[in-house]
Image (cartoon, rainbow, N blue to C red; front, side, top):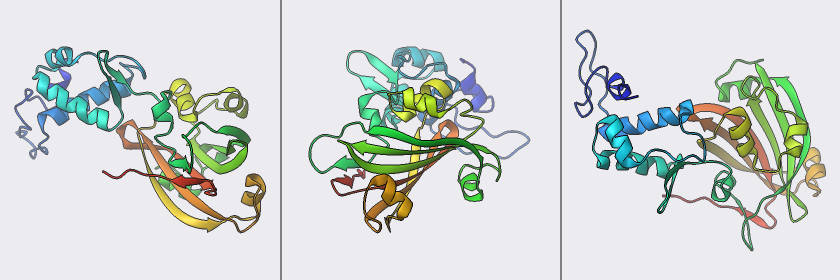
Amino acid sequence: MSSVLSNLNNGSAPGAGAGASASGPSPTFSPLYQQIKALITQSLQSGEWKPGELIPSEVELAARFKVSQGTVRKAIDELAQENLVVRRQGKGTFVATHHEVRAQFRFLRLMPDEGEPHSADNRVIDVKRLRAPAEVARLLEMKSGDPMIFIKRVQSFDGVPTILEELWLPGVLFKGLTAERLIEYKGPMYGLFETEFGTRMIRATEQLRAVCADEHAAQLLEIAQGTPLLSVERVSFTYGDKPVEVRRCLYLTTTHHYQNELS
């Protein structure tokens, strides 16, 4: 790994900037801490440090990449802001995992109007292998007709059906995912994807709109047809900004609200 930084810079030494190739155009300049951040991310992506594991200290990483400790600290600060790593006072920096309580609500923005957020009870309606519809394939940068895993489930809070979800996952990545496995697994779904399928969700984009419950949604959510719902379409990405999930949700907001933090 000690030579990876130089490879990233097309043979130039750390701190030398982005040198021009004799036979090609000058590559785009990247600050040194961004280069270190990219190298650490590569190690996360390759599985050198697993979710939940302690990564080397700033001093060790500085020696490994032959840069200053301050440069490493700035890189790790950005990784922490992006929830790829977690700093723990007096313990060090750990690879973030979807099994942490605080991470379980990172991708669920539906919050109760009263009380603290808590995990939902899940009822799996359907899990099957299908061919990717054209729109789903486009969002996942796949080909129409590629194998997919389709999941439908209802999430309830305090016995009240509140979320109707439909998920589309690449069949190759999630081969072996079955209804039985989803039902017996008691942790967060993204934790299952991370642990058993080696796919960690890093970020997501969402589109929201107001809709009325059709007959099918009304039946599963136990509400009147035409009840107002919040429709959310999410595309989730793993390392390398690769899309690996399309999730379409209908939220009942009678006792919940969608909460987002802007910074």
